Amino acid sequence: MSAARERVADIMQTDLNRPKIEMTRIVAWMTVCFLVVPILVVLPVSFTSKRYLSWPGSEWSLRHYEVLVGEGGWLNSIGDSLIVGTAAALLALTMGTLFAVGHWRLNNGVTRNLRLLLLLPMIVPPIVHAVAFYQAWAVIDLLDTYPGLILVHTMKALPFVVLSVSASLINLDPKLEQASRSLGATSRETLWFVLLPQVRPGMLAGAIFAFITSWDEIIVAIFITSREVYTLPKRIWDGIFDNVDPAIASLGTVMIVLTTIGLLLKERYEKAQKTKTGAV
Amino acid sequence: MPTLVETAPAVSGPSPSMFRKNGAYWFMVLLPAVFLATLYLAPVISVMVRSVTEPVLGLGNYAVILENRAIQNVLGKTFYICTVTTGLTLFFGYITAYAMSQVSPREQRWMFFLVILSFWISVLIRTFAWIAVLQPRGLLNEALIWLGLIDQPLRMVRNDFGVIVGMVHYMLPYAILPLFANMQTIDRSLVPAARALGASARRAFFTVFLPLSLPGLAGAAILVLIFSSGFYITPALLGGGKVVMVAEYISVQMSETLKWGLATSLATCLMLVVLALTIAMSRFMDVGSAGKSG
Image (cartoon, chains in turn blue, cyan):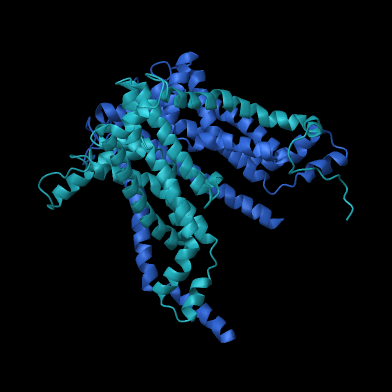
């Protein structure tokens, strides 16, 4: 018996260093490089001194970064994306949190079906959204308006808020709330001191998801906005179509750097959370 | 066992008394539901309605979809690109997830970080990067010419190759992340146990590990199929009008030829296929775990 166990432990040890694993490891790293390296080419390309997309060679220049902050309208588009993204994230956060908490507390057949309705915008293909909102917004005069795009992005972001807030409630016993009430807390105090601290991490994650959903959304924006609302993805889209504008490389570089910083911060935050809960 | 608090009838259906007691919670649930029913469900349903009412009442648009050669070609192209994309994505995604579950924690963190990083970069920036790499005077062609491997630039965009490369690039994290999560749940001592009982490494993998990871593989396959079937950005930009998939075809019908009946009926078909796939997927994985959840 113990000999067999020893054998298993032995193989578990040596298996890690077997050539088979080496082969899959090589393919895996090649796949990871395939994912990352092409994205990284925008970094050097963004420093080209030429008007068109090219390797910088010996002459490096910041001209395509100057375009970003110049008269080309990139800053306006960043502003539009910030406005739409912030409004959509706040709306989605409010409604998604309300729903997640309500569903967690009631959890019956009706709310389970409603939950499927709220998750629907995550599954329906974006081009179907584009067709749907293009004709619906034409009827109620919301085409090319901030409220029009904000509403669409709110609906597209709702599933992510519902999911992340629900996830933070999953291990919370609904009786906790009754316990709080029976110990004399009012329903408002219960909400504020018992529920909210539990769902706050889920709300934060949901709000970030919601904002990024809006910040990246392009397909519906192509169809329901034109001049009044001109978000960043739409300007990138037009820039690629018109002349493969190298300014997009400099913008991409900024976004890659910001994403990397964001992910590093997230990792550090999670590590801190882990040691905090580990210490208790 | 005596409890401090009364137990709520938590999982039964709603009743009038319960509604009165939980009025605030019902309000919390119904407000977003009504919002979505009026501003989301109504527009989506009106797409389906228009598909059978324009230009005339009936199933004429669907008959056109079944007969028209051009549409058949678009659907065939969509099916072909989706199948190849899903196959390649699963093959490389599975190997990557498998290696990630086997390597040291340190190496695993690195791989995970890089996969997540590519996942979070906007699809537009990624497609732009691929254009910079693959176009006739792009970096890859220049490098190959500089190395003397080719004389004439290779055609790598505005064809199936470019579209598939871009789509596999987009879909890979969607396969790697759920596959990796699924593999984490497989008991790590099973394969060594099979080896200890005399199975070769190959046999242990194919008879023990692979069957255990099949539900994750099926879930990932359907997830990738769902995303690729309605994909618009990458085919439109890397296909450059030469490779038209169904989403781009719908957009052309809607904005250029103004054939709304055709656009809405194709959109309806696409939606029904995706919903059917989602129901199939829900058998293998929690639908809620899909989407950008890294």
